[in-house]
Length: 219
Image (cartoon, rainbow, N blue to C red; front, top):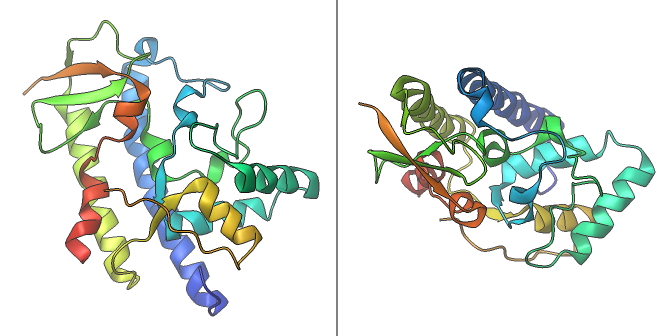
């Protein structure tokens, strides 16, 4: 997130927003088809107490959204980011569990809650323990095909923008660095019908589904 021409940064953000729309368009039919089996709603934020790692281009979207907030909201988020510790809630959350940068949220936040497909275990998917409690089988066209398309588009995005291997850090670390560029902390690297497996948020949140592992192909 170093200084660079504004035009290049805008091009990256335009392309990232296209990718976000692709994910949102793939998630929406799953939610519509299984609405009664999904508990996700404003204020449901148990999954947001994990230290998800995100890429540099996603962090730029958060910083862009941060700049649109009023001064008090922005100061509160940055203070929480600087003080963040493992197990704390995401610094972008309010006290009531609402996301203050919802429109700018990263990829994992956009798809979390629906079943996440892992090509290393193609016969099953992982989902939040609160969701899909009474669903044994899922429509693979709704689950697998869109997520494969997300992975392909993510690879294309990074290659077309010349981004190379992804830099991954937690949301809190990226925001703390944006507030104070002298901080350059190293975040941890992220490394037919389908039966569902209910898992706790920690395990599902760390599931390495296809688009996250796709970064490895760029190295």
